[in-house]
Length: 288
Image 1 (cartoon, rainbow, N blue to C red):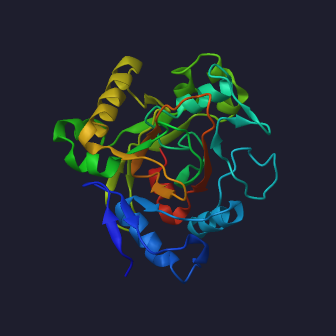
Image 2 (cartoon, rainbow, N blue to C red):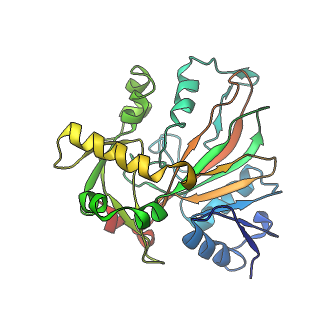
Image 3 (cartoon, rainbow, N blue to C red):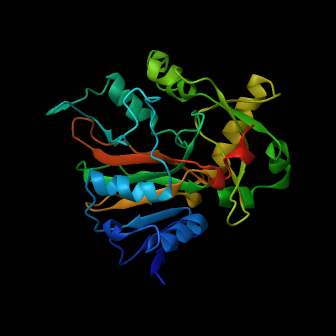
């Protein structure tokens, strides 16, 4: 049995004694997947994943996400979170590239605006800033469990509408107009995602939620804000301060996360891929 250390009272564990490069579908992965289903976030320290190893680890969980809509071919690729542009340049603080990264500082769930959203994100520390740059996480499964019944009743059967440009409009109106944020039609997902393995419900919410079906705009916005505030109180947050060699994977169906600021004149690069949800992960049951 793998040895773990709890990182937060609600979710998240560090997994000890695992070299992620050595996992196979039948050796090591089943135990990791079970921990993923039950704890929602796993931390592995001291890893040495290159791009090939990173993609291979992700492929154990499912297909690697391609946000280019096939334009770059079918081969899986990294989609790193970095303010480095070109060989040696750092994007300016007011550049759209940096503003998009700042958009990740809103509480969100990845890829809810895609026709097939993400099951998991896998981040690995590559280049860290001198200060800041932490990533914060909350469990929307635990938040749903603890939510007062009057609030639950308002969303138990609700359907949320998700739009990529909606979250980016909170950062910069011109940023939100970029084709990379407008190329997908709105996606609708039920407010709750039931884990097929554990049978537990989690609130499926993100900064990309632009409306609640059948609800007036102002009322829907107020409810989304209230739900987000409930999920993200200080006592619910696990703050991950990155170290070299860290790899973190989390369940997008049962968490929200956000990045934290860092000195934007310094490079910060996290190797990143998302893994797409499959039918076995509850996709059809969650469609709005």
